[in-house]
Image (cartoon, rainbow, N blue to C red; front, side, top):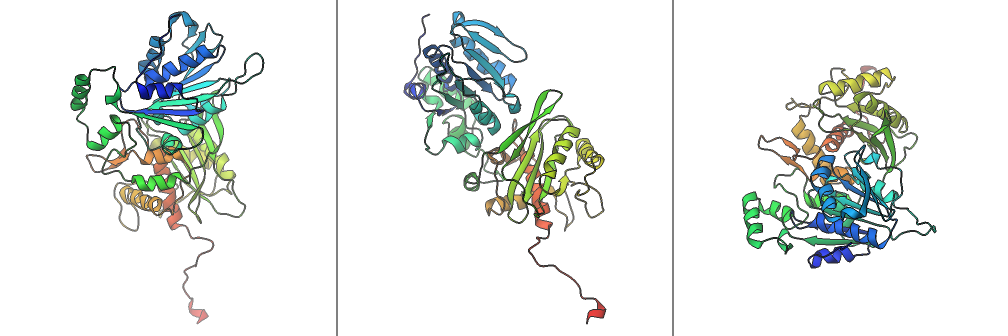
Length: 446
């Protein structure tokens, strides 16, 4: 086989890197997926028998971008066999395999042993996918010797999430390579500039999409970069348990800190949209410290989400729980919690179970905008301690739209933000067991 592997200087530095974890963070059209694929090809030829995982944020991106690039660069005679269902798998003549996964369901990346991992457009993938991929890197050859395990990501930096946390600052075993769209010497300079001009990007968008820099895209992002950066120091790797439904992994139960007997925790949940958009998310918080303890997250059906919440809440002394009741899904979750016998549901001033997020409200009630602003203040002042890098990723793409409403950018999510904002309202209104009680003296006590 005549295999030619080459690239411009930054690409070649990335390809030759022996760092256990490496990132090629670059602008669109910079050749990041190209060189990341060549890196995989180079290693699988050097180490016969080595298998690999390749991921994309969705199967649509996999089919449109990642898989075609692998098909283009891997010689056809190197691929002995391939199948497409339930997910693509290539068998190589070297004795190794390539398993292609979508990370929109990161819990499904389980089982099997590999030597190398390539995560394409990784900034759009959740942290759990990165963790699960690393767990798979334990393959050994026929003699029982381990391979030189490596995981690398290729991405445009579209969120300040775990990719930013892992690679933005120098750390042992990690290596970051950055490139601009303009660095790609294999593209015509005039065509590149014409393409950039047609995009009509703002200054911040140009820095991210073209120069490959970590930026907050909108000048009116609710959460500021400096505040997100400070919260990144609080992020912890969770102990995660996969949640299943009908034999399919549909979510995860993530624990940052175990419950302590006697502490009255609080919890809140944001449910997915009735049209199927978004995800279900519940967060459990210590009201005395503002510290996040655990989270249930996934795309499971509403009743299964309620069951997962019920089990998790039992580990934290059955805290006051406020599922958002907007829409049909929230109603299903509430009814299931009642059916399960959960008695510590949050009640509003009219005695109704669950939290209702309203666009307008008369004080002392809080509308959606002020609820979000109060949570932003808690994040900024570090009264709230954020343990999830995925939640911080959502914060970096939560912006004010043309209608004035804060919401996620297209293709992003905000379920973790909304669950935490609701929980902050519970914390704000919940009386600390160590605080003062307000009371009125009865006439007979004077």
